Image 1: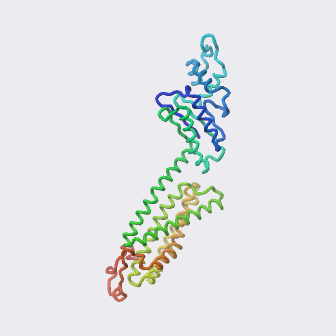
Image 2 (image 1 turned 45 degrees about the vertical axis):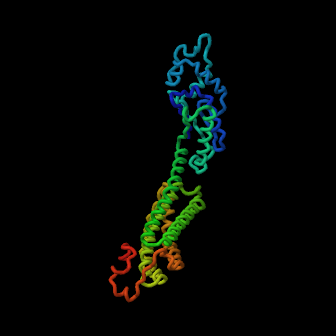
Image 3 (image 1 turned 180 degrees about the vertical axis):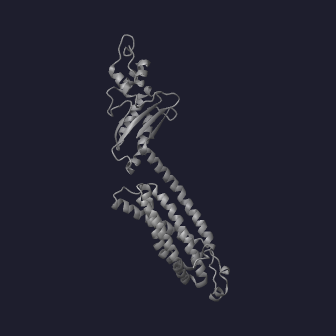
Length: 368
């Protein structure tokens, strides 16, 4: 990747070679950096000519010679003559020619090429970007290049991935609470309860962490990868919460309806048995659909597909089949606090049309 130093307001990198070399040294001193090449170190080694001396020598070069070197033309006649009474050191000309690839034609931008000791796509490399950026900017400040004078930025694939990961982490911290809040409001309005949405969301969240942990274990222990892609946790969370909330609404609506007719314990058992076939079928279809993504060569999609498939299966057979019904029975009447579950006697239920029974949700009136 590259470290790009850009001078604002018409600055000239050739007049700031001392500052450039200080920034180069600070980056090279980082433990994850194997080498840095730039205007003062074209071969990655300490400069043979002091940067301050080199800066002064470059200033003495005739402009025609500089233009010829940068354009790749032959050196003009007399171009090596230098100032009256003297000649230009060919070593200085060679060093100037070596800067052409790292300093822009207008002199306002200098580029340092950084080589890492580790895999540039690894998590450790992404973690190293922040310290390297901080070291470069601190060195620029110490050299007198304030943010008003020059900017120091990182460019390349590794910094881009690091910035994307940081943005993803920021979005996750914002989106996750918002999604949980919205789902909690919907469940609270549907079930007319404060308690039920809390443990239902806890069950969904627990299922998410279990799915992510199992998929991570598969990738690291069986496939030898470093871990899951940084985008996988957020995408998996959104899908599993959405699917989990859907199954929860279906199940708990039926639980509320059957509990009003038969009592909580019997009503829960009936609700689970009568919705089990639908939930199981939907879960198997969804899990199979997401497992198809694991056949793709893109790692992010493969990680995401397997994590969601595992989460859907856990949600279908463990959370909806055992965990949620068990919590409902244990909490009893507290499930519906601060509201109350309306009760309908068996005789009254038998004598009323289905439409007149205490409705829990129109979404489940056609359930068997």
